Image 1: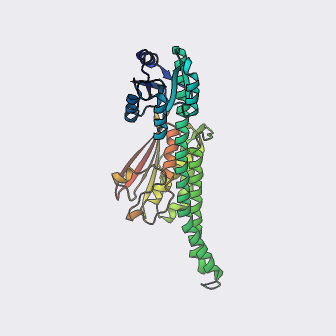
Image 2: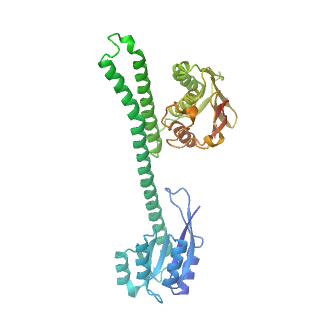
Image 3: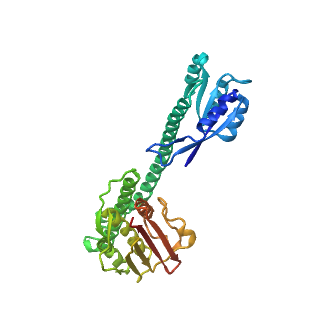
Length: 373
């Protein structure tokens, strides 16, 4: 439940009391809202009192009479405009003052309600205002977050792609100038390093594409009955060359088939992230164990490693966009900082949970729990 504050500024007690009574149990609900909105009604009998409440309470909606003792309603309207408050102002006025109400709408008021009004007229007006205000704020939030995420994308791309491109260019120029002679074998280390850099850039681009698809609001999913064990095996096979380079052994400790209704690509993304991190942050000669367990209530995917582990403070930083754990042990480990945040977003789409257990210098265990219902 959300709550909007409505301030009624009117010198007629009957108008204030009537508005309070009409809206006290009124709720606005609509398909695009996650929760219904209720209203808290505040009252002021003068413009001066209204301004005090505006500054203190920051109401969402003001029902404002123009003819008031002391300063007039249009002056209160002007005050709200000057302060740049995110408040919708609606003039309530008698039929005799409709011309003034129309002028007020041109000066910044959202609308006007002639009085006397019926409960149905007031509720209909408030419902319309609430929906418009809700959509306006959602749009502002999305625009703000959109600019932030675009800035983060550009920052990551410029930083993470510039370094490997410079390195590859340097190796190619050395080969072009034949600095180590004409034997191609002399350049094997440069070629291997260049290929490693290319793989890193490809992984970053794929992570960005995955994040963009998920953040689009309604990612296209192809839900079907999938064998989780088979997908885990595919991910292990994909990561095995990298594990061999790191001298890390991979083990799948579940042989039986475990089925779940899911998008196979999303489950593969989860396994790829968990297993690649378990290898990446492991020790030479370490091991990675993958477990899959099915119960009457849930399916649990568990990936354990014998790696460098994490402190509780470092665990608290996981699952945020572009966040990587930085310490002396991870100084030479590259990554986009997107893998776990993407995985978390996918798990959330299935109403799942992630549990992380970790001990520094002993290893980490990531468990993903999917409810079967």
